[in-house]
Image (cartoon, rainbow, N blue to C red; front, side, top):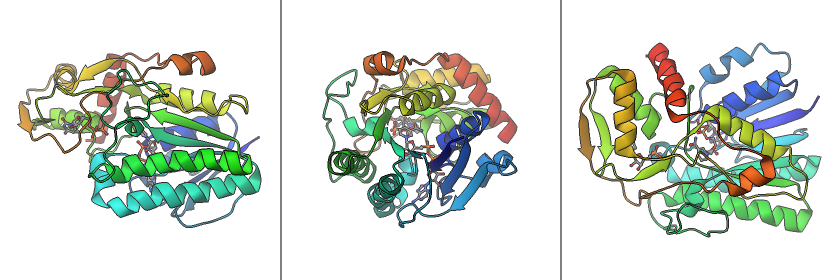
Length: 310
Ligand code: NAD
Ligand code: UDP
């Protein structure tokens, strides 16, 4: 049995990961400060004999025993991470230092939940891992983008300087059940608006694209990455190459929910990336991974989740 630390374990992806790790017979320590996560997400896990909850801010150093670390603690929704930008940088930089120090002290392999935001508003399409990105260092998204970029730097410097075993996943837009209804990200916003009969808030003209990966596929990719040999560090893109405009997303959700909501066009937020799509050649080769859940299948499961929630 492995003892696995999941920072940010009460969040959307983290809670799915904790459940899967418990189901596979591991001992799980979930560390979270509940800034964007929720106790409800982990409520069903609390009674499990091998689940431990640690309420803690990852930016504050601590020591504990672990064989493996999934480092997910960070706000992920643009609305949430821009609400307290200094906290976002602090979490990503100091939080990564804390997590890396635990890995250094214990010899644990540590996986960083990095992001497609590393590529900023990309000039290379689809995005390959060798692309260095097009990121504004002083804009409203920078606290997250640059925080995550600095975290990647720290991961590779800890490997170079201390020989730490690292894995870096560049996660593209992920969606599914257990997303928070008030999270502010596009999939949850549109579904909640459609189910309530409210206007669908489409930013800009809706021609910007994203590529959405269903959460079960993402968890599978993260676990496969953690299981790779010590020489494979990544960064590796994890995401679904199925690319859609935000207008197409809105129309699909309207169709699947049977909603009569109307589209309401709102200003495009500053520095909003125009297009985003992962090249997953490396993940296919090194992890034998590719998403298997179709967009409609994943959206239907997510809509069911929100119907119950609302
Ligand atoms: P989330 O907001 O649902 O989960 C993040 C969790 O981290 C929350 O439970 C939150 O309370 C916790 N957290 C935040 N700051 C903390 C701190 N200082 N100390 C302890 N815990 C803290 O977001 P998510 O979608 O589950 O994302 C998880 C990770 O994956 C994040 O690192 C995010 O950057 C990354 N990621 C997610 C996506 C996506 O589309 N969901 C895309 C790219 C990267
Ligand atoms: N978006 C939108 N309406 C919303 C929320 C988001 O049109 O209510 C757009 C947003 O401008 C962006 C895309 O949807 O182009 C994805 O936004 P999200 O906040 O989910 O994540 P991002 O990929 O930008 O980090």
